[in-house]
Amino acid sequence: MDSDKMMRGIIPGIIAGYIFLAFIGASMVPGLSVTTDDAGMVTAVEQSGAMMNNGMLEMVGGMIGADALIGFILHIIISAVIGALYTGIYRDNVDLGNPLYNIAIGGLIYGVIWWILGGLIIMPAIAGGELLQFNLNSPSLFGHIIFGHVLAFVVVIRDGALGMGDDD
Image (cartoon, rainbow, N blue to C red; front, side):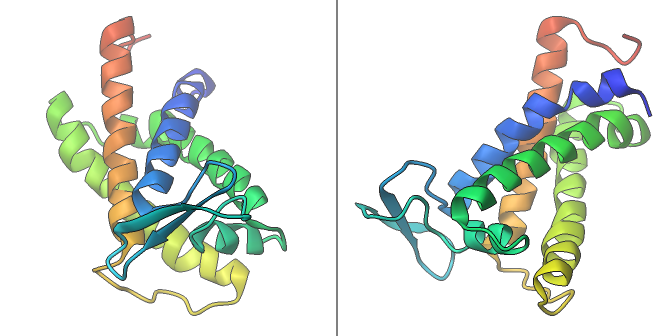
């Protein structure tokens, strides 16, 4: 595990984490509340007294006995760590030979891995919920897949733009 490679994944992980939160409808703008339907689609954005709304950020914050704001901060930190693990470990072991395959297939696999590990095992274990409650129509599953794709995409584009190959 190369610490330089891991450092390269922090910013892409944060970017992917923000997009994940936007996808599931977590408001990151103070004073705005986002309402979603059962399918996770945003149905309304309105002004409210709440700092952030969606339920997911409250659950993440609740893992350590905190509110949605701390949940947001914790989610971004976790996203940075997962991004670092992507570039430091996963990417070296899952190279599909083509940047587009790495984004499409590698990102999909990485997102599903973290949906299972984070959303179905770690979070329920810490929060006291039931483990491995699979729901293949959940915004969390699709959010994690989008996270994996965005992470892989940002890493491939950034490495190509800055000439950062595997040998650097």
